[in-house]
Structures are given as C-alpha cells and as structure tokens.
Figure 1 (cartoon, rainbow, N blue to C red):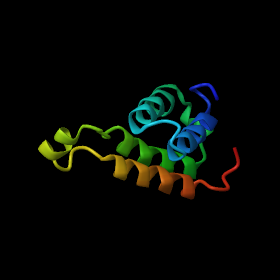
Figure 2: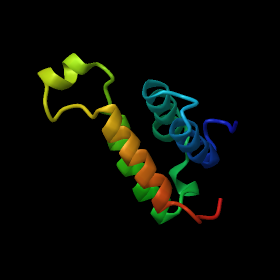
Figure 3: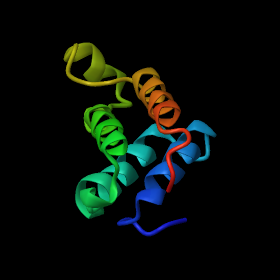
Length: 98
C-alpha cells in the first residue's frame, strides 16, 4: 500500500476495487482521501489529471443506497456506473509511467 499523498495509491485503489478486494463505498472513501484531500496534483501528468478528475466526479456522487438512487434520479451514481468508470479510467491510464 502507498501513502495517501502518493499517486501510486490511486492506481492501487483502481486494482483493489476491480479485483473485488474492496467495495464501492470503501473505494470512494479512500479515493476521496487520496485524490481530493492529500494528493499534490502537480505530480500528475495531464492525462492522469483528466482521468482522475473525471473519476472523482463519479466517485463523489456514488451511492449504494437504492432508495436514494430511486428517489433522486440523476443525482447519484450506481455501483454499475462506478465500476464502468473505474474500468474506463484504468484503460485510459494503461502504460502511463509512474
């Protein structure tokens, strides 16, 4: 595992979530702490900055509560939305030098 201010932690979180080692809520909490609070954005390439920013928008509005998703359509993202975005982010960043 990497410190929360290390961009390698973001890549590690992607793999942990996609492999099923952590759930959506844990991923989103850890992503928030790392990306939104601790990370120095200057350590990211332009490609990483865009991909991780786009993922932050989805993870920040993720809800595992089905009633919230039904009650407030278009406000929250589902587990399926999150998984798709995490997968897309990993694919976009394959081959990026850490």
